[in-house]
Each structure stands twice: as structure tokens, then as C-alpha cells.
Length: 568
Image 1: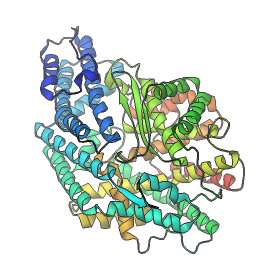
Image 2 (image 1 turned 135 degrees about the horizontal axis):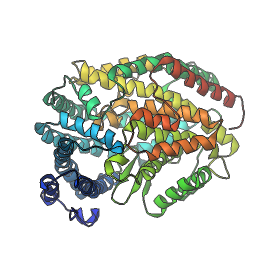
Image 3 (image 1 turned 90 degrees about the vertical axis):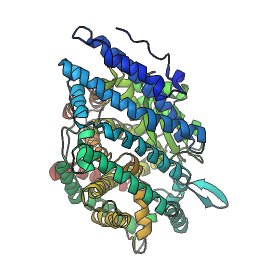
Image 4 (image 1 turned 60 degrees about the horizontal axis):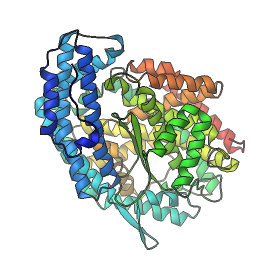
């Protein structure tokens, strides 16, 4: 059997669910046997790829221009009308496969995921997911439209970021307060939006027989290899290891700046350079060094990045109306990734581009897998690809290959490693906060949520004086898009960061072998269980204080060496 499919994603630009339903109905009703199942799977995979890419193109267009009403409408049609139906049909087709009893070694993990999707699917949740997608788009519209006045001009919130690195403390404070005020000005609207999203998610969980959305999310995300209790162990390990390390780093920063108290606008200014490092001024100055870095790291990776640059698969600069944040997404029909960013000319942009490029390399590596479900992984493996790339690329960031002079490279590596420690703290706080939201019984209360965020941050974030800034501290969670758009997608960053540190440690002894293992792990796609993917890369999942502490100590030792003036 070979199903007649749409010619391309572009042919589906104006498609509705009524246009797509017959393709899925054909797959659901054609006779299926052990002899025909592999051809049937190929047809289903090809249909999924073309439909996914069509919807992804609509999402890209909207996030690149949230002010365009036509793009907003197209994105909403896909996200709230079409994709929930596609998901429903996916469960229907998965049940056909599972009922057939067919299996294959390289499909064992996929079938395990299919079984889970079948178990938790409830028809009454389909319209609730549709409604949620509309609220996600509303959040993107609100946050994508935020701006501030800076020296007589309107600027986006990401465009305030370079000012947080200025030596002039008054400039830093003004930028910090303007960024927080932008979110606080829409606080009531965002809180009401979250009220609605929270209630919908709890209903979805209840419909599927779960006591709360956290328990549902663990099943829906196919977290077969760790539990909520493991995440609580992760929080405790971070509190015991990374939190004191960050506090020591903040004490060092306070002394270096000669301050009586370190305020939140003092945490990003670079201590090792008189002027903020500006790695690039324009798009060409951003992309060309990145190309040289990936060429030097590995010719195959360099060729893949060159393909993205030449085919218009990079949208990197910040501009009005563009959704905040950054992402890499797959275009599965053509087998290419797309990177979206809000770059403003700071070192963090370089880290972000290298991070998202790691995702793109993962997409390229796994695309040869025969079926679309075998190419994707959980976020834990996806973020291992991206976070490892940040650290593996570090030796190439210095000129003439990369962006920085030797002194700048040292300053940037210090900033990067400090951020590794701070990210573990932030990840633990976000995950602990989301756990509280969906299990405490008070997550429906906006004031209680804000108070809980302050308590969580006080537990994990030490060494910074937030006195008199409770509102500004609360604003931080409103700008964490994962909490609104992708609940419980955050602990993956922490697990992957610890995996990446294991590769970073090994690369100092064996850079060639470590990169080879990294690429081998990426090529597995979703054909192996999560611990096996980590093992292929030379890492393991870490939740315990002892193993986490060893890696934190390595980071601190490298930081101390760099602070003493040893070149990167």
C-alpha cells in the first residue's frame, strides 16, 4: 500500500482539518496485517512529516511576527484546530499497531510510548488541548508585544539585556527595572491567563484519571526512567551543591565590584573586562564566526550549519513583534531544522546559537532513521545535544576562529561557567515551583503563586540582596515561557546540563573520542531508552548529591583557575 499524500507542506498552507481527515481515515481503515504493516508505517510516517512541517511553518511565521493577524490566525488554526485532531488520530492509529502485536527492536521504545499515549488518551480532552493552544498564543502575543523606552526610542525587552552588563551601575539598574516593569504592567492579565490554563490542565489530568497535572505530565512526557521523587532528590542535591557554589560566586562578585550588597542588576556585569564584550554587530558578524567554529570542531557539523545559513533556516535578530526566547524546531518533511533567536550582540547570544545548533545537529543526525517517531527523543536527550555543544565548542570561541580576543575568551568562559552553576539553581527553582503549583491545592490562586515563587527563590537563590524588590522578583516567573506554554518542561535542562558536564570533563582528556561518542548518541534518535542514549554519549543521569557535587567542584576549580588569569 502506498497512500497518495499531499505534494508538500506548502500545498497545505490553507488546509483545514476537513482537508486532512481523509488521509488519516484511509490509514485507519485500510486492512492491516503483518505483511503490510511496514509499508503502512511508512505511509503514516510520511503523512505525519508533511502535516507537522506545514503546521511548524505556520508557528515559525507567527513567532517571527506576532503582530500580523493573518499569521496569528494561521498558527491558531494549526495549533488549536488541526493538531489536537492529528493527535487524536495518532492515538487511533497507534492502537491499530499495538493491537496487531507487531514489534521490532528499533521500534520498542516507540511502541512503549504509543502504549502510554493510548492509556492516557481521553476524547473529552481534545477540545481542552485546543483551548489551551489558544491561550498559549495569547501569552506569546502579550509577551511579544512588550517593550520599553530607552533614551527616547522604543526597544524590545531582549534589547535591554546588553545594558545589564554595563559598568555604570545606574544604567544596569534602569535596564533591570524597565524589564521587570514591562511584565508587571501586564501582571493581572498574565495571572488571569494562567488561572485559565491551570484549570484546564487540572481538568485534563482528572479526565485521564490522575490526581493532578504533574502526575499526568510525567506519563505524557514518557518519563519512564525517573519519577517526581527523583526530581525532588535533584532539588535537594542542587540545594546542597550548586546553591553554595553560586553563593560563593556572588561573594566574589560583590568583593570585586566593591559593593556592600549585591543587587540583582549586579549579577551580569563582566568583572574581567572594562567594557562589555560585544562579540558581533550585525548578522554577518554573528553567523560567519559560528560557521568557522563548527568547521573547526567537526567538518560534518560545519557543513550542516552551512546548509542552514544558505537555505534561510536562521532567524536570529531581535525586533518589535517577535516572540521572546529562542528555539530550534524540526522541518521533518525536508529533513532540516530551523533556528529562531532574539540576538542583541552579547555573549549570551553566542551561547544560545551554539545551543540551538546542537539541537540542529541532533536533527540532522537522527533524520536517517526510517520513521519519524524514531528520529525524535525526549527533551532530556535533546537538551543533552544542545548543552553539550555549548561546552564542546568553547575551545574554538577565540579568534581567529571565533569571536573573542584571548582576554575576552577568558572573560566569556568565566561567564559561561558561572551561568552553568546559576542555571542549575534556576532549573531547580522552576521545577520545584511547578511542582508546588499543581500539587499544593493552591495553584489556582494568583497571590498564592506569587508568594510561593518568592519562597522557592529564597530557598535556591542566595547571595543577592532582593530587599524592596518583591514585585520585580515575582516578575521573573511571568517571563518564564515554559511555565505558561510547556509545563514541566524544565528539569530536562538540569539533567542534560549534568550530562553535558560529564562530556566536558571527558573532552579535556579525549576531545576526539568524546565528540565521536556525542555524534553516535545523537544518531540513535529515539530508538533507545534514555539511559542508553546517555551511556552512548559517555554520561549517566544524575539526581544524587555526591555525583552532582563532583561536577560542581570541577566547574568551581576551572572558574578559580580562570579568575587567576590563566588563558582559556
